[in-house]
Image (cartoon, rainbow, N blue to C red; front, side, top):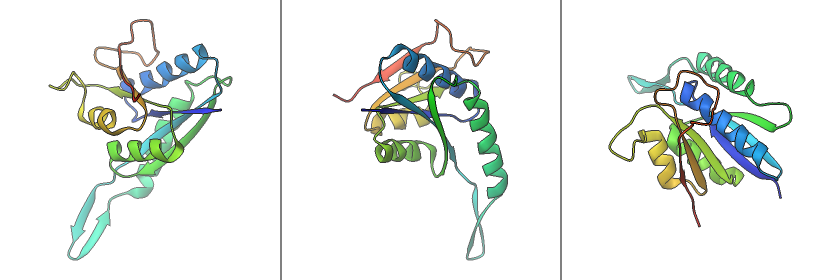
Amino acid sequence: MEQKYIVAVDGSDAGLRAVNEAVETVQNENTETTLELLHVLSHKVTRNGNEMVIEQPDASEDVGQGVLDKARELVPDTVSCETEIIHGKPADSIVEYAKEIEASKVFIGHRKKDAYNGVKSVAKKVISNAPCSVIVVNGVHQNTPRASANTNTSVKTND
C-alpha cells in the first residue's frame, strides 16, 4: 500500500528543511511513498461596505506556485512527488488535507519558539489535530535549506 506524506511549505528555510527531512525519510524507508508538497494560501480579506474583498488572489497563486517550485527542486527524481495549493487557514487546511488524502505523516517546519515545547502556533495546531504522525523540523539557527545530520525533529504519533 502506498503511503502519502504531506510536506507543508511556506517559503521559509524551515519549510525547505522539512522537505529535505521528508526526502531523507522516504529514501531510508522500504515503502512506496508519495510526497505531497502543500502550500496554503491565506488571503487577506477586507470589507468594502457589505462586500467582502479578497486582496490579490492572482498574485498569491503565483507566489504559492513559486514556493512549491523551489521546494520541488529539492526532491530528486527518484522520489514520487506531487504539489498542491489550497486556500484557507494554514493549520486547519493542513489537517483537513491530511484527512482527505489519508496521509501517513505530515512534515512541517517551525521558525520561532514559544512556551509550547518550542513549537510555533501553526505547527502546534497541526500536532494537536492531525490524524497522523507529525514531524516538526527545527529551522531555528539554520542558515541553509539543505538537511543535515543535526536536524532537530519532534514527532507526535497516533497509535
